[in-house]
Image 1: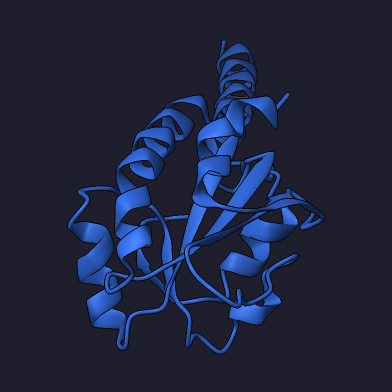
Image 2: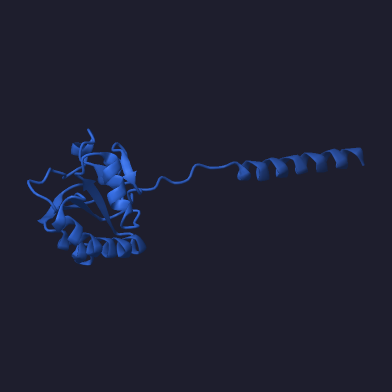
Length: 165
Protein backbone atom coordinates (compact mmCIF):
# COMPACT_ATOMS: atom_id res chain seq x y z
CA UNK A 1 0.00 0.00 0.00
CA UNK A 2 2.79 2.40 0.92
CA UNK A 3 4.50 1.60 -2.38
CA UNK A 4 1.32 2.36 -4.36
CA UNK A 5 0.88 5.62 -2.46
CA UNK A 6 4.49 6.64 -3.20
CA UNK A 7 3.98 5.75 -6.86
CA UNK A 8 0.80 7.85 -7.01
CA UNK A 9 2.53 10.80 -5.30
CA UNK A 10 5.35 10.50 -7.83
CA UNK A 11 2.90 10.50 -10.78
CA UNK A 12 1.07 13.48 -9.32
CA UNK A 13 4.36 15.34 -8.96
CA UNK A 14 5.21 14.70 -12.60
CA UNK A 15 1.75 15.78 -13.72
CA UNK A 16 1.91 18.91 -11.56
CA UNK A 17 5.37 19.78 -12.87
CA UNK A 18 4.14 19.38 -16.46
CA UNK A 19 1.13 21.63 -15.83
CA UNK A 20 3.27 24.16 -13.96
CA UNK A 21 5.75 24.30 -16.83
CA UNK A 22 2.91 24.85 -19.29
CA UNK A 23 1.76 27.87 -17.25
CA UNK A 24 5.16 29.56 -17.40
CA UNK A 25 4.84 32.63 -19.59
CA UNK A 26 6.35 31.99 -22.98
CA UNK A 27 7.63 34.97 -24.92
CA UNK A 28 5.05 36.19 -27.41
CA UNK A 29 5.96 35.77 -31.03
CA UNK A 30 7.67 38.89 -32.34
CA UNK A 31 5.33 41.33 -34.04
CA UNK A 32 6.70 42.25 -37.42
CA UNK A 33 7.87 45.85 -37.38
CA UNK A 34 8.36 47.78 -40.58
CA UNK A 35 11.54 49.72 -41.29
CA UNK A 36 9.58 52.95 -40.98
CA UNK A 37 8.04 51.98 -37.63
CA UNK A 38 11.44 50.84 -36.32
CA UNK A 39 13.02 54.18 -37.26
CA UNK A 40 10.06 56.06 -35.79
CA UNK A 41 10.95 54.59 -32.39
CA UNK A 42 13.95 56.96 -32.42
CA UNK A 43 11.98 60.17 -32.86
CA UNK A 44 10.14 61.99 -30.10
CA UNK A 45 6.44 61.75 -30.82
CA UNK A 46 4.38 64.73 -29.69
CA UNK A 47 1.16 62.79 -30.21
CA UNK A 48 -0.01 59.25 -30.99
CA UNK A 49 1.84 56.04 -31.84
CA UNK A 50 3.10 54.76 -35.19
CA UNK A 51 1.36 51.69 -36.61
CA UNK A 52 4.16 49.07 -36.75
CA UNK A 53 2.41 46.97 -39.39
CA UNK A 54 1.29 49.48 -42.02
CA UNK A 55 2.04 48.79 -45.67
CA UNK A 56 2.17 52.47 -46.63
CA UNK A 57 3.24 55.56 -44.67
CA UNK A 58 2.47 59.20 -45.46
CA UNK A 59 4.91 61.81 -44.13
CA UNK A 60 2.73 64.93 -44.02
CA UNK A 61 4.75 68.11 -43.56
CA UNK A 62 2.51 70.82 -42.12
CA UNK A 63 2.20 73.70 -39.62
CA UNK A 64 -0.52 75.65 -37.85
CA UNK A 65 0.56 78.98 -39.35
CA UNK A 66 0.22 77.59 -42.91
CA UNK A 67 -3.24 78.38 -44.31
CA UNK A 68 -3.13 75.69 -47.05
CA UNK A 69 -2.04 73.19 -44.38
CA UNK A 70 -5.00 74.02 -42.18
CA UNK A 71 -7.34 73.81 -45.17
CA UNK A 72 -6.07 70.30 -45.97
CA UNK A 73 -6.31 68.94 -42.41
CA UNK A 74 -10.04 68.06 -42.24
CA UNK A 75 -9.68 65.73 -45.27
CA UNK A 76 -6.44 64.31 -43.87
CA UNK A 77 -8.05 63.63 -40.50
CA UNK A 78 -11.03 61.89 -42.14
CA UNK A 79 -8.68 59.67 -44.17
CA UNK A 80 -6.59 59.00 -41.06
CA UNK A 81 -9.67 57.75 -39.17
CA UNK A 82 -10.32 55.27 -41.98
CA UNK A 83 -6.67 54.19 -41.89
CA UNK A 84 -6.86 53.52 -38.15
CA UNK A 85 -9.81 51.20 -38.65
CA UNK A 86 -8.18 49.46 -41.61
CA UNK A 87 -4.61 49.18 -40.28
CA UNK A 88 -2.79 49.09 -43.63
CA UNK A 89 -1.75 52.75 -43.85
CA UNK A 90 -0.40 55.41 -41.49
CA UNK A 91 0.12 59.18 -41.49
CA UNK A 92 3.07 60.65 -39.64
CA UNK A 93 2.70 64.41 -39.28
CA UNK A 94 5.98 66.33 -39.42
CA UNK A 95 5.21 69.66 -37.77
CA UNK A 96 7.02 72.90 -38.65
CA UNK A 97 5.64 75.13 -35.89
CA UNK A 98 8.21 77.10 -33.88
CA UNK A 99 8.07 74.81 -30.87
CA UNK A 100 7.06 71.20 -30.19
CA UNK A 101 4.37 72.52 -27.83
CA UNK A 102 2.78 74.53 -30.67
CA UNK A 103 2.95 71.44 -32.88
CA UNK A 104 1.26 69.31 -30.26
CA UNK A 105 -1.49 71.90 -29.80
CA UNK A 106 -1.97 72.03 -33.60
CA UNK A 107 -2.58 68.30 -34.03
CA UNK A 108 -4.63 68.02 -30.84
CA UNK A 109 -6.93 70.78 -32.08
CA UNK A 110 -8.13 68.24 -34.67
CA UNK A 111 -8.92 65.68 -31.93
CA UNK A 112 -6.87 62.94 -33.54
CA UNK A 113 -4.19 60.55 -32.31
CA UNK A 114 -2.13 60.98 -35.50
CA UNK A 115 1.56 60.41 -34.70
CA UNK A 116 3.34 63.76 -34.80
CA UNK A 117 7.02 64.63 -34.73
CA UNK A 118 8.52 68.11 -34.68
CA UNK A 119 10.64 69.11 -37.67
CA UNK A 120 13.56 69.97 -35.35
CA UNK A 121 13.78 66.39 -34.03
CA UNK A 122 17.42 65.31 -34.59
CA UNK A 123 16.36 61.79 -35.62
CA UNK A 124 13.79 62.86 -38.19
CA UNK A 125 16.25 62.36 -41.07
CA UNK A 126 16.51 58.68 -40.09
CA UNK A 127 12.94 57.99 -41.20
CA UNK A 128 13.38 55.92 -44.38
CA UNK A 129 12.44 57.92 -47.47
CA UNK A 130 11.95 61.20 -45.61
CA UNK A 131 13.30 64.45 -47.05
CA UNK A 132 12.46 67.99 -46.04
CA UNK A 133 10.01 69.78 -48.30
CA UNK A 134 10.81 73.10 -49.95
CA UNK A 135 7.26 74.21 -49.21
CA UNK A 136 4.34 72.97 -47.15
CA UNK A 137 1.93 71.29 -47.09
CA UNK A 138 3.78 68.42 -48.69
CA UNK A 139 3.39 64.64 -48.51
CA UNK A 140 5.91 61.89 -49.15
CA UNK A 141 4.40 58.43 -49.58
CA UNK A 142 6.66 55.47 -48.74
CA UNK A 143 6.21 51.72 -48.48
CA UNK A 144 6.99 49.84 -45.28
CA UNK A 145 10.69 49.70 -46.20
CA UNK A 146 10.88 53.44 -46.86
CA UNK A 147 10.92 53.30 -50.65
CA UNK A 148 9.35 56.48 -52.01
CA UNK A 149 6.15 55.71 -53.93
CA UNK A 150 4.90 59.25 -54.56
CA UNK A 151 5.06 62.81 -53.30
CA UNK A 152 3.02 65.96 -53.61
CA UNK A 153 -0.11 67.53 -52.19
CA UNK A 154 -1.95 66.25 -49.08
CA UNK A 155 -4.81 65.04 -51.31
CA UNK A 156 -2.63 61.94 -51.91
CA UNK A 157 -3.51 60.89 -48.37
CA UNK A 158 -7.17 60.67 -49.29
CA UNK A 159 -6.21 58.23 -52.08
CA UNK A 160 -4.57 55.82 -49.61
CA UNK A 161 -6.78 52.85 -50.50
CA UNK A 162 -5.28 52.74 -54.01
CA UNK A 163 -1.83 52.15 -52.49
CA UNK A 164 -2.52 49.23 -50.15
CA UNK A 165 -3.07 45.58 -50.96
